[in-house]
Length: 278
Image (cartoon, rainbow, N blue to C red):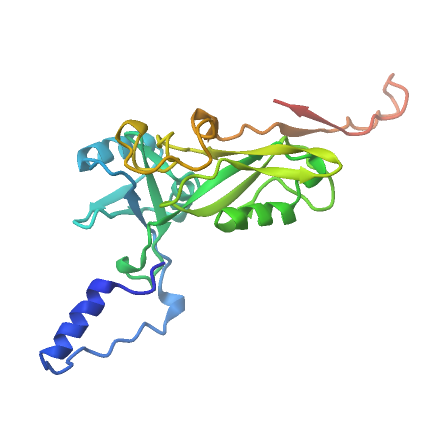
């Protein structure tokens, strides 16, 4: 969240210069914290150099969030959007699956806590689920997930890593808050002497359209005004896009009951077996 607002500071400076007396009221937050229900609102912003009409936003939201029981939508003059939900489960579902795609542009969402002002929200950062492909199995640990996440931005969590045993997945999946003003990171080279180095590929879940020239969100290649990314061509393209993973379900086969004395079945009861199904 932003720490200060230049416009407000400028207004305060001009007010002081005019010699106006400070008549700002003294405010205090409620001390009855237990009686204040949690906020059911999210603040959102569409990241795009081209204006996206409120009608298009409403139409896309209505289709994408048709599972909601109730939703209040408020569009503001500062390009921020406020969504208020009926219950916390709906809010978490929408927030966890963000960003959402609005006509090819990403809609980022942030939780509006009860002690936050609308001016506190900084949409120069946004969260993505990022898949990390190409790591050896013994490198897919929570410690390495945190290290990779910290190299990308603010590491939040991972959902398929374990320090105590090799991973059963083919990639790490981490939630990271990244700087939306910078080019997307396509990956990194993992050096592992004496073996040859390998390329570790990032794939961003729910990645909307972005520029294949400079690697930034908010515009496409044909209207790019940025300098080409120093990494060069070939690092950007559809390769950075990943769909949400469909994990194998682990099913525990329950052993049948021990045969009764009057049954004609014989032999020991088989042990429970774990199998993977797609």
